[in-house]
Image (cartoon, rainbow, N blue to C red; front, side, top):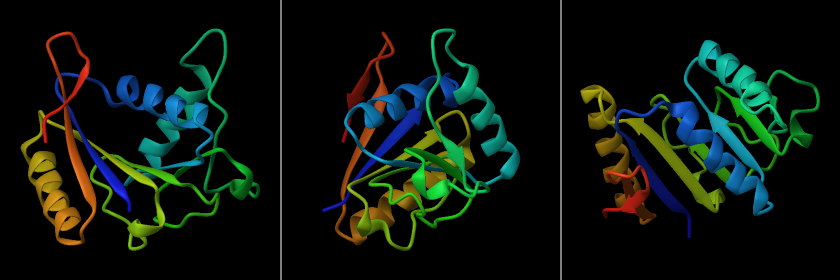
Length: 150
């Protein structure tokens, strides 16, 4: 059964939360897709993943590349899955993919400081529960650690 995790950002930048989550997924041997809603956002994330650490980078590519299918992490604006990802991250309001049940895990990251993003995440929560997915809700505590709230 597909597990859907909702990560509620509060006063945090997406890149600061998303990058360690992607790293953990890659460490577990999972192939990852990160779906955004704009090419500009995906391009910015692409640049970030090459430069966020002085001692390394996170191997990845974008949907535009000929070798997209070989990428361990693929950044995209569509719900296609050319790299056979088992984990899909949805950012900036990207909707649940039509083939959501094909994934081991879907991680929806939303901005808790944006009322529209919160309302949209609630809609996705209702949709996930209606489809029978195992949905969990995560929020940071005072120390910034993720705590399962539902």
